[in-house]
Image (cartoon, rainbow, N blue to C red; front, top):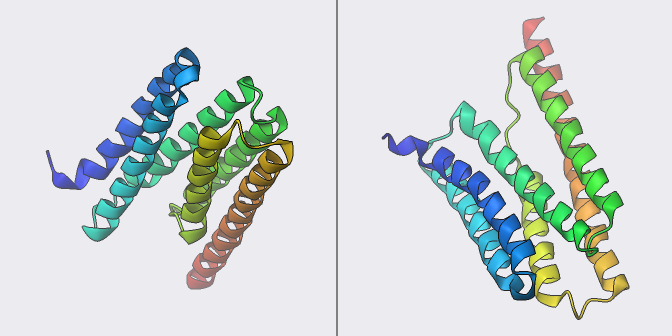
Length: 184
């Protein structure tokens, strides 16, 4: 095995952790720390794969798709689980999934049209970090957080996700302009 594939393997491991998280979340809801442990472990694989890929220049085209796919699948799964348990509102889940589908379609169009894979940027990473922090807070303080506290946390999540989406759109349009300029 080539070492450069370790980040991709970690992304696949993160995807396989999703059903484990779901099982622990619902089967051991009274011991939510078990699901939280898997969630945090998944976050650790995300940090590790990104660090290794950038530090060692092990960035692959597959990794550019696999890493964000693993992130989004995990995030969507967590939100759906929280909504099923009436912790997160369903409209938040729908909005998040719509945003992710919109961004995925945009990335595929960009790849097909200009043969360019949009890579993650600081704002995407920040949004993922914010999601992990908010989820951690909800898991740890779900009994103490009132409706207003939850609303504030969900508002922060929505604002960061929308900001990230807008920045990706701006970056993609800029890349498209630069490529068109070079062709002319």
